Image (cartoon, rainbow, N blue to C red):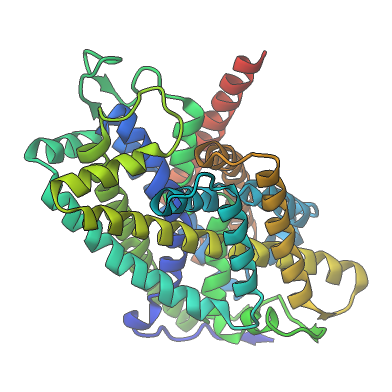
Length: 471
């Protein structure tokens, strides 16, 4: 049945999904990878964080465009256009995010703070706790939205205050220069550098670039959350959150309703588009960039030239806390570590929930397609993928694959390739499926093509570089 495009709601009621998508990348790129790179190479690489989150802003908006207009997730649309899409998203999501680097980082910081010799069993316990929380039967989206808003709105000012107390005028100047790619001189780069310092590991930089925001298939969850909140044509859609919590087979409808594309509907879409664009720009891009900048600045002020240049772990976080403690008070150093532990734990919880939703929805799409039935136990599918990821992580830890940075970088490189794939699929689908009146303007299409080419070339160069070291 053809339906009119709904009238827009107030801007204040829009706030929510962008907090979730931002927080999903908080524990990997913002807290770990960019500060790690800054601790080794200074602030000259800050441009990568700016460019990375700007790329993701444009990518995410095209994902939102589809769901606003179609009232369904992009997975539904891609399953219609590409037969193997669902299988690809299940595989790439599991491989990319089943590697438990984020929770390993949380457990390692926790172990240091409370004096445990090894973080492996702490990490296993944390995964089990997350599994229990997500299996409790309560609606997770509302909880996640409240937690992430609280952490971002408290955590970002806390880091900002620390940066103001610890950063000198020279440090702030270095950040400003770094955002345009100018790096200062140091032992490995005595003349300074532009964009890339000598000795930087491309895989680590690509990992940080991919996680400047959410990363991998997690960007596609913006589509799910837009639909869950009932934005645009999602107003007519079935809410998936409740279906994930019911343990019986139920009739589900994943497809959205058709829009009438009248002048009034097109006008309403444009109003919606303006609102969601501002919301994502303010929450995802601005707060995200602000958070990354402050965390990089804090790392620069406290850990640059104070950590082993050859180190490839997250010891810089410990160095940061010690320097904060010396400069202000030991209690601030402790609070900083506690904040890091919470942010990383919360990120892993959100990642496992989102990835399980992604895989469950794609599995359901194929099951409905093959069986021609609409009654599916979506909750059972969701929990199966959730605990499969948790068990996979525990197995990796049991074989001593536990170094946080290594795990995060491996997962992020895989997710950078996944981003290259879904960027191409989503934008090709939007071009083919959506009427021209609601498609992206030509300047946006050019930007998206350039982003697609960038990720493709960068991913290929990184893979060649890594394989070259192996052979």
